[in-house]
Image (cartoon, rainbow, N blue to C red; front, top):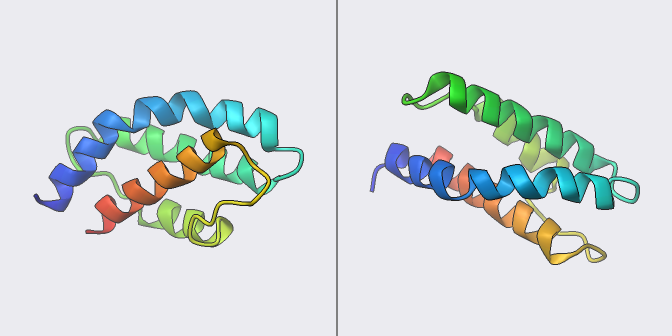
Length: 100
């Protein structure tokens, strides 16, 4: 499977769930994990660029690089819920598919 196809699958399958989860996780955990507000901002930018570029592959290298930096390569904090963990896992999967 090409990286475009893999990223398209992630976009189709994971982005709708991420659009639901990210705002909720930011609201619930943003107080104890202020870095998540930056995760939300970057994810919103990824969505915006992805929609604008469709059906072409968007330029997201900078956004994913920043996400890796602020999340310590998507390391899930020990004091968060399963939704937070799911967001990091889906973002890591999207990053991997994008980079492939």
